[in-house]
Amino acid sequence: MVTRGAPLRDVLADLRAEGRPSLSFEFFPPRDDPGEAVLWESLRRVEALDPTFVSVTYGAGGSTRERTVRATREVARETTMQPVAHLTCVSASRSELRRVVGEYADAGVSSVLALRGDPPGGPGTAFERHPGGLRNALELVELVRSLGDFTVGVAAFPTPHPESADADQDARVLALKARAGASFAVTQLFYEARLWSELVDRAAGHGCEIPVLPGLMAITSLRQVATFTKLAGAPVPARVVERLEEAERRGGAAEVRRTGVALTAELGAELLDAGAPGLHLYTLNRSSASLEIVRALGLRDPEHAGAPAAVAS
Image 1 (cartoon, rainbow, N blue to C red):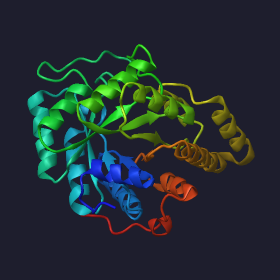
Image 2: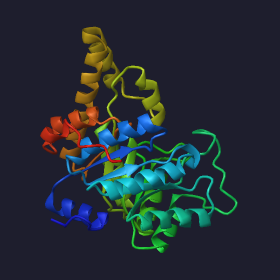
Image 3: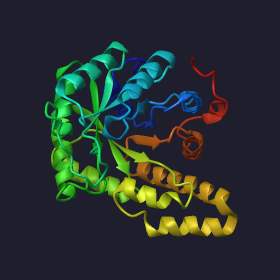
Image 4: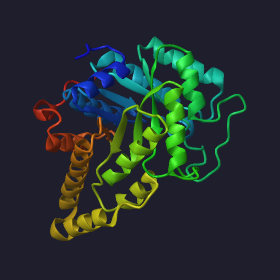
């Protein structure tokens, strides 16, 4: 087993060699003081599980860049967890991107998730390259790797990216990012295990062997179905919606939430059985559902994760 502080790519490689799944969680930077308190309560709960890493997102169009840098820096300094900092090409010049990577390095952050990012106008609008910036995530991977010994992660798409010709194009791009220096990938949301297996097989056909971590998040209310369909880029499967609707008829909102968590745990178990190298849980900064999924899967002993440690100042 690697020691704490080892490069994330080595941690992931060792876990893979030992046949032990990684476990990671995604958060976003808080907008205000109450949001910061919620974030830190969730981080402390997750910290008790000794996750492989936690990641901190950018807002749309890079709108939370400074808060992302600050939150990632505080995770590095105030917790025992390994942070992965998100970085996007949106609305940033090469020099600005170099500056942000430098700030991460100064804070002791050595892992970056390199993403092109959604256009400032939101999904479905045209991506416009900054006049002094980068065109895509492939160029961002190359830039980050040129600036130091960073572990670089990238996005992967179980269903075709809206701007891709087909799923095979996404697999070819993933392979190119791996050849450029990416060490792992995290998928967008999806709700059928076969989509992960098919993605990995397509990528392998292009020579890509990096670990692809399934990204999962429980649907805990029926109102979320439309939102999650948009995030996943494909409809939530009818069988999932039917089980959630049946849960609502049977027990209302509480039963919908319980069923959503159970469905996500079932998907996680199916993915791990299929050979997934670990799971990446999107938390929306509230850890309870993620902890329940971990408990159901038996990935960690979450006994001590119910009561968070003191919030960092």
